[in-house]
Image 1 (cartoon, rainbow over the protein chains, first blue to last red):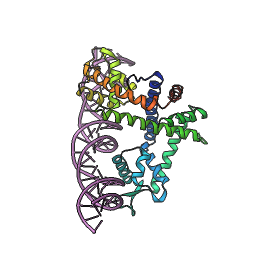
Image 2 (image 1 turned 180 degrees about the vertical axis):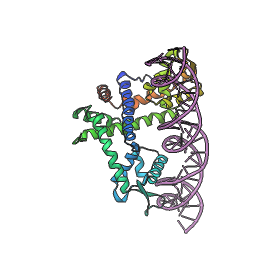
Image 3 (image 1 turned 60 degrees about the horizontal axis):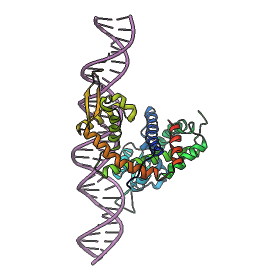
Image 4 (image 1 turned 90 degrees about the vertical axis):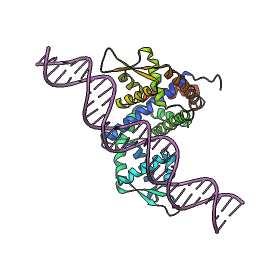
Length: 145
Length: 145
DNA sequence: CGAATTTAAATGCAAATGCATATAAATCGA
DNA sequence: TCGATTTATATGCATTTGCATTTAAATTCG
């Protein structure tokens, strides 16, 4: 470990990742806000819950998907319930837990958000990199996990 | 705009960027916390302020560097002042403003944080990608800005 | 010059976050 | 079986954030 040293490519790659990801996410958030829509974290949650179908999904299964701590997941669900976008359905097979199930209003919200999100992805990713570059980027980033 | 559609490479690249950046930053934050050190945003601010030397740097010049909104920058400086890591020096050429100047304690803190940060960069970036891959990653990410 | 506008920075307040802990059901083990 | 432990989720409280607004100095322009 002594003598470990960080080279210039490493610094540049990290810096780019740190800065670019923040800038892009901020731009997406700004687009949502401009369209009077909720934030990216709501989208991510709604999408995972919608994909789970009528059965819904357990909060603890949502945690690794959303990369959020447990308490944040719980409170995000609170807000989604409060906005009538999901229901917390009682969970028969485990009375400690619940299932998050999307409502029609939730589906509608997610669809409206996707319209904006899609435009962002086109503008901030698809138009800036060629197909092969996008594939390379994804591949390199995946090696970091 | 009608007919615009997002292809699979775009989705994958976005997803990777979104997920990977969050995961990596979280890991760095966790490393700081484990070492009883403050967060990445403190590091970034201390570094920019330290680089500015004895003259210090104006808060409004810090905003684009840190990619933070004005009020967040102001309050981050509050906390740094409060921890004796920087001083808010009166600014003679513009009485509305101030200059953020690092203190010896601030320099020391930044140096101690860098030891941890460097290990993270080595572990999460340098060890996972080859030199050429790191260069490619940085280059692709830079095209997104 | 002097009123109107712009810019730098701070702040009051409501909402979100982080942390530790609480609650309560499920599972494990003697 | 029953107390001990683990797991799922929620929540109280302090800190941080986001937003809108305030304060005050600098700049613009008739």
